[in-house]
Image 1 (cartoon, rainbow, N blue to C red):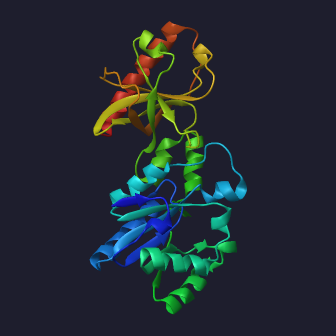
Image 2 (image 1 turned 90 degrees about the vertical axis):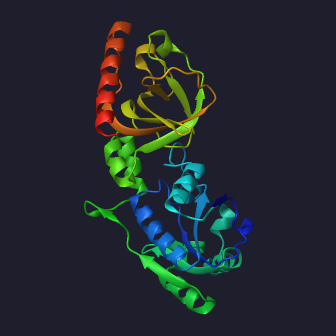
Image 3 (image 1 turned 60 degrees about the vertical axis):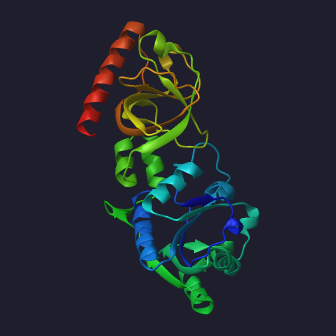
Length: 308
């Protein structure tokens, strides 16, 4: 299983079954499509390939700023390969990519990926002015020797699961709704960096996670979830916010790992958001804050013990 960053770097020796899309978040709809693709590819001695893009086309085309991604490129590739994908291509999306005609892009897929079958959602389109829609690709396949397989989108409560809906749920702090659509807790990852160490001074040390500045962070508040340090996993209660009691500036993600006492500065830490325990609020003083932290810790422990 490999992850590369340029389509031209792929030199496959076997025919492949390919799907193309952004797949931000690798949610349940994506998983449904890709699991079937993997099964089909491997049962016929073909490679399962996902071609995705970075930056997100929405950011290039609409000039979006701020936190937009549900996954980093590395997280996305890891999650896809966990499903069984043999090759993930994270291809650069820029103005040059945007101008490529759909037929020319198909030719590149055949040349570099030995495209044998292309799997897409019913609303898929690629290439300049989205000319590469399902009817166009069906004809291309007939001319160039690959099949096109169209798969229905997965619905949830009457509507299609989408990365947009997941972003909206996270921005509202509804991590349980997001979890249902993702099929797992929403996860951020980053190095543990030096903070102001106020938590340590009051007996509740926290790991300040340096989350990528373009990845979505759930709404300010206190959350129960799982902290992953390499292959180790720990219960944790994490504060997202500006620490109003201390008049903090800028949003931080600070995880208090339960039953844990190690120096992990500089190490990579992941945190999956399982339940929002409460909103962020300002306390009258340290004693009131400490009492609330103790209550949050016990509430988090109880929830995670029941949902292990």
